[in-house]
Structures are given as C-alpha cells and as structure tokens.
Amino acid sequence: MPGNELTRFTLPNGLRVVLAPDPTAPVVGVSVHYDVGFRSEPEGRTGFAHLFEHLMFQGSESLEKLAHFRHVQSSGGTFNGSTHPDYTDYFEVLPSAGLERALFLEADRMRAPKITAENLANQIDVVKEEIRLNVLNRPYGGFPWILLPPVLYQTFPNAHNGYGDFTELESANLDDCAQFFDTYYAPANAVLTVAGDLDVERTRDLIDRHFGDVPARSAPDRPSFGEPRPAGQLESEHVDPHAPLPALAIGYRMPDPIAELDGYLANLVLASVLTEGDASRLQQRLVLREPLVTDVNAACGLFGPFEARDPDTFTITAVHSPDVTQDRVLAAVDDELEKLATTAPSDQELAKVVARWVAGLHREHDRLVSRTLALGSFELLYGDPGLVYQLTDRLSAVTPDAVSAAAKGLRPDSRAVLIVSPAGGEK
Image (tube, rainbow, N blue to C red; front, top):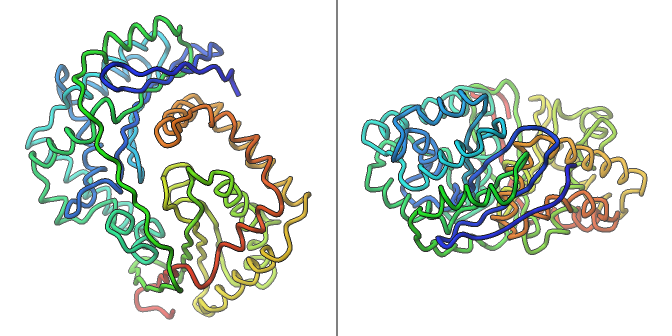
C-alpha cells in the first residue's frame, strides 16, 4: 500500500478535509462524502437519498446540465456517485493536472446544484427504470438488501426500501429537494478527500479557494438508528416471478461497527470461514458434501462492510433445489455455526482466511479510487481515516476464540429468515 501520510484539517465553514499524497502515478482522486444515506431519508419519501444523488449530476450554479460529465471526461478522467445506508459519495479520478478542475466541480454543486422541475421529473423516470432493471424484472431482484430488512428490523430508517416506492418517488417535489439539500448537503456535514499525486500546500490553497466561500450551515443532529435485537425467529416469504429456484436469506444483528470494531472484524472473518472458497465450512457442507444448495454466501453488511453505523446486518443467503426444504438448509447452517461456537477454528484455517482478506484489502486500496473513497468514508463514520491503513493488522489480530464468539452470537432465536419462492413453484 502507498505511504500512509495523511493531512487533516477543517475549513471555517465546517468542511472536513483529508489529504493523502502518493506520487507513484500522475493521477489524483477527489471524493466528497455527505453524512446522509438511505436511513436518513424522510418517511413517505423512500428512495429520496438515491434520487437526490442523481440530481447532483444535473448541473450546478455555474454549469449547465452534462457540463460536469464533459469537464471530467475531457480531462481523461472518470466520475460517479453512490448512495449507502449512512452516506452518499461523489468522486472523480483524473490526471493530476486536472485537480483544480475536480475541486471546482465539487465545490460548485456543494454550493448550489441546479434542481429544476424538468430535471426532477427526468431523474425520477431514470431511477424508476433503474429499479425495473435491477429489482422488478430480474431474478432475485432486491435479494436480500431490499427484502430482508423489513423482516429483521422494525423501524422505518432500518426497514424501508432505500431504492424507493414508485408512488413516493413520483410525489417528490422541489420543496422536498430544497429542504433535503439545506439539511444534509452543508459543508459541515461533508468530508472532502484528495488522494494521489498532490502537493499538500498547493492543494490546501486550492481547496480554500474553491470551498472556502461555500456558505456555512450547521450540520443536522444525527439520530441513533438503534433498535432492540429480535426476541425470536422472524419469518417472511416473498414470491419472485422471475426466480428459477427457491432461496432463503438469514439475517442477524452484528456488533456495532464503530464502537465494537474488533467484534465486527471477527464477524468479517467468520463470514469468510463460512463461505469463502471451496474449503469453507458451508461450501463444504451444503454444496460439496450433502449437497443441499447450489449457491451459498455469507456477508457483513447488506451492501458490504464499513458502509453503515449500528445497526448492521450479518447475512447468509442460499439458493436451493425445490426438493430441499428451507428447514433442512437452516438446520445445516445452525449445526455448522454451533460447531464453530463450541470449537474455535484452527490457527491454520484462520490464517488462510485472514491472508485472503489482507491480500484483498491491499489489492483494493492499491486502486486510487477505492483508497480515496475508503479514506473519506472512514473519516465520516469513524472520525479516523488512518484506520484504513490499520485494517490489515487489526484483521490479522483476530483470534480463533474471537471467531468462535462471533459464531455464538448468530443465534437461531434472534434472527430473520426470508424465504424466496418462485411464482407457481414449490417452496
């Protein structure tokens, strides 16, 4: 991984800044993370955080629609944005000579995006088409990230569909947009990250020039999204008109990703012990030996790890033949978890899993875009971007007993089970 030198400072308007110089290639990454995601969108406006991400690309105070695209691409760069449970990010990666251009573009839309009735109507249609493509008209669409939360969680922030309900998307208006922007898109509610081929002092000057006069607004109070763990096994069924085979998703609550990071990391390692590679416990048991399923996966976070504050979700998903009942699959999963809970994995088994994780992190953060986004999200969620560089050591320090304790926490009497049944097929 490149050098770990970081410079952090905060502008008078509240914007937090992270600089991570790396002169090994003449490219630079710029990202802005806003502390708002699916869980912060108002009730009655499902999908609004994602819709607003789309609107941020539709022009700004000084730029007409599509100008952002043109300026980045003409510099030889790439750009995008994405919405997560607890943040929304925007980024550019381009030759280092284009740094000031990227800073201007992000500052201009932080100051005043151009949100018109025409742009809003157009982007509502774009988002609806995205939902049709990714959820409504494909096998296992929304499985498990849309379908599992309303089974596991009780409160609107944690349980609702972050992609959005068509009726609620269509009812969004310009007043909603103005209020959402004023509340969540303040500099004090954001993190600017610049990584790559940069001079720290020059970059500070450029940031002050472009972001320093963005009007200050106070950051909103951030509510706790905490809620009690399930007091039993919660169950639901979803009929999928496109699914060729039955499937199930099991959802468990995890340790607090922020306050209990080491426990959270033990769950990451546990997920790999269960399903990463042919030698993993559930691959061996459910796919190769018995076999009960055609596919099985375990994961931390409905979108991946380190994308949410508490509460976060440990998932196990499986696709299986109609001849195999969900109870057989659940019984086998519970049996394997019980074995891990009572007998810790061997040092050798753990070493293989951790080595794969460490290699994956090095590979991921060697990509400038991934490193830039990770530094920004860790500053936002943890208040410490340097944790990105400590993850490999923290994961390597996870013990067999910690993995066993993590398995012990995945209890059948405190979980959600979602069954996906093909339309017209057997369960």
